[in-house]
Image (cartoon, rainbow, N blue to C red):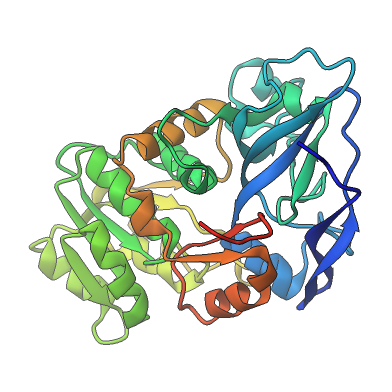
Length: 358
């Protein structure tokens, strides 16, 4: 494969100042790999960085961390597992390997992890360099046979959901309420079904989002603008409340509602982080105390969760084709972002090939 000197990449220069530009292709690290990016998914955290910046990102920068691509070059000393020509699924995390949690195999609690699109330039580019320290401790897998690179690229958010539901012990007979019908809410819906949930209720304040979540087959959809969400959940559970509530959104009031609608002994998965200035919602801690509720927070994931996410996509137990509602060539990045910010997209992916064909 001929590698040219320049490539197209999305360069973010300031909040809401970004464009596809021609920039030099990064050199292959001596101890690493150069990857020709096939697909990069657009994540909610990408949108937040585009809108408001990120404390770990110094502009100008290339973002994008849901990546699939092909190895086109390896460094001279590189003697790792991945070969030129191999197609890889690349999640952003690289664990430090040295903290107490990593030494105990609890990589999801790593104290010093780094991420592609923060510590290293991201995947909204035709090529990405994967240095040796990322390859040594990173979340990277060969794409399973039969799985398209488009679907492999979106395994990363699924891995985060796998971790959350594992920690929350979602399982047989559970009534699960998912607040937020975006891509994360839809992933949680499918995953709860795979894990044996008996009844799945999805709520949102946007009717368009509820319609996009319908193919994931929740048992009930609630428009939280039209009805009182807590009262509606009580009705649907015959006054008992939900055994699991997942807050798949960044809105403080939903964490308060989650506590109010959980049954005795219920588990509340606080999946969506809150804005820093709104991170102390007025939760009634007496409800937590007297109902013996479990408040469970998760953020990243371990390599085993990423491996399982790819298997779930390969087997279609997580229907990735339903999750991806929009496909764009990289040249149409601005259009894709605009639609996503307007809430008209469930999951958008971008093809880096100049043809833009899927």
